[in-house]
Figure 1 (spheres, rainbow, N blue to C red):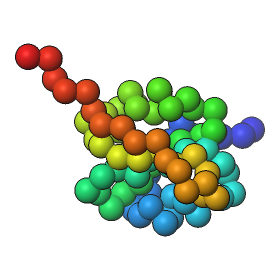
Figure 2 (cartoon, rainbow, N blue to C red):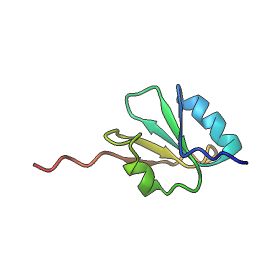
Figure 3 (cartoon, rainbow, N blue to C red):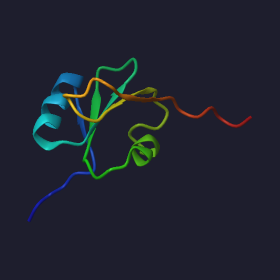
Length: 80
């Protein structure tokens, strides 16, 4: 039986990126936080942006450790 987690929290961006090297996927690097969150490669960016673990955070979504580009997003402003 294979266990495929929907996300894994790491205490640092470096730790999450090391995991990503072996497992692929996405790493969410929250702005103003030391923690980072890894998501499997099958998770689309739109679901990551709406995921409870990232909701309300601004940050970068890193797709590949060899690729220096990143997707950035900020939470939607609350409706008045």
